[in-house]
Amino acid sequence: MDKKPSYLWALATGLGFPILQVLIFLLRFGSLNTDSPVTDTIFFFIAGALIGLVLIAALRRCESVGAYRATLVGFAIGIPFVLFGMVMGGLMGPLGSIFLGVSPGVFFIAIGYFIGRVFFRK
Image (cartoon, rainbow, N blue to C red; front, side):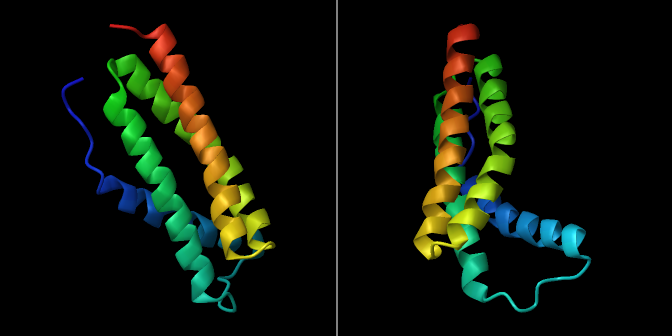
């Protein structure tokens, strides 16, 4: 593949996770969580940006369109697990939110990348 995504997209990915957190809270409880500290949002952003960096690095290594798509599918499948890990990790503190959020994201991105690499060779 000739087109390589920019690493700046990791910031957009990082911004998506706090937005998802707010949307899920809004849908679940019917109101915004105005009592949550700003640090929670910052840690969700950091975890999302780290996942975005891994995603962009994997996408830049893809050699075919099929591998590119498989990596994106792996990322999409991993999003619910990432959000669950971030919420559960938040109970263990800020680093728990980052580590338990990033781990499933990296795992599913890697699975998608390797499946795409095996099945969609040039």
